[in-house]
Length: 272
Image (cartoon, rainbow, N blue to C red):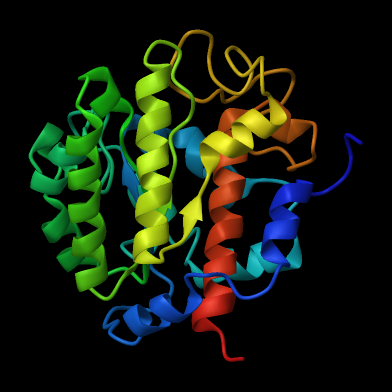
């Protein structure tokens, strides 16, 4: 079991036929005016943290499809076309170009947190083909009501769509102290993705499928909101075997992001 590649559920998702979002996102893609392959990663410390981009940048066990889509994303260019670089590069104040430690969804929309530009400014500067968005852990820490969080995330999605960029939402990891609130946030994100017909990475579901009872201290740091980097002998750049994807929370998240971006490219952008 430990050597099989990759997770069965995600392979099934990728092979079930045309996703529900495909036609709607083709209409968005038709309005794109930027450089092909630019994919931003918008979020808080879970995105800014170096281990999130580790597997994409130098990880082991990549398939030919993984390598091709990472090349398309300019991974390794370390410039304004390389979204993995933009998410992890250090800027003063505990942030990168597209993510900031401690930022809430409303703060990313407005800008200013640790000097992070507003979402509108980020989109204007980099004009991405796609944008992976994980926000909400700090909203939960601030005890923002579900309705307020849902409203802000809807505005973020609208801004990305208006730019001709394909948004890819991600659910949040389980929360050790605000578990019910985060579950409600994630339900709102799933509903938003269904309503707007946009792609979704269900990170919460992928964690709970692998670690339904013992995620705290394995895929997430003990009593912490952050995924684990190195845990159980597994690091964030190790091969995505079934066993490794049960150990490193950042390996799981980075690998899922690459696979979902490849899926969206296949069904929305590639000639058929």
